[in-house]
Amino acid sequence: MIPLLILGLLIQNPGAHGYELLSLMEKRHYKYIVNFTKGSFYYNLQQLEEKGWIEQTQQNPSTGGREIRNFKITESGMAEFEELMVKHGTKSEYVNLQCYGALLFADEYDKNKLQELIQSQIDQTKTRIALLDEYLSDTQELPGTINYYRRMNENSRSHHLVNLAWFEQLRAEIEGHNA
Picture 1 (cartoon, helix red, strand yellow):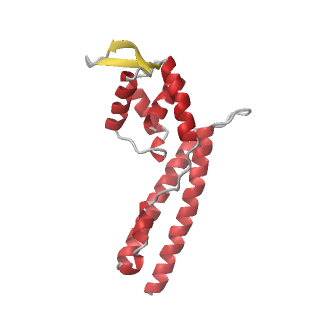
Picture 2 (picture 1 turned 120 degrees about the horizontal axis):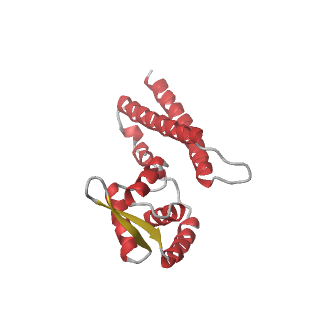
Picture 3 (picture 1 turned 180 degrees about the horizontal axis):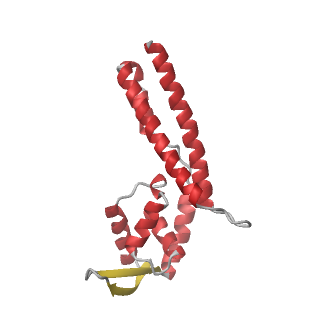
């Protein structure tokens, strides 16, 4: 998935350098789409260049003396982008929340500690909703256009609201059993 994101960002931002692309991924909260680190990002950037799917447009020395490598997508990179769009655009997988695995054994776990786990999920979900609210308040959908990423984030927010309500209900039920 990281190669698709890099290629897509280079289509949107020709001539960007690696740090600009990574910053866009972080600013746009792409971590909700795919897990990535700085290392995995730069590894994929290097692989795309080695495969000839992106190429340097120029090298400029920065004020710190390091070279800044700007990239653009190549013709073969556009073909790869098309293939990756089909590959990832046709996939549909279940949402995998690891906390569900832990809840399988909730009856065997201390109820007070279970409440702490549930509260942790509530706190994390509220944080995600706040980040999505921040993004959504900073973006607009222009008349006559579709901002797909905004709509994905609206959908993600809706899912988080459902999860939040469920976690809060679960916490209340556990508290009721402990009373």
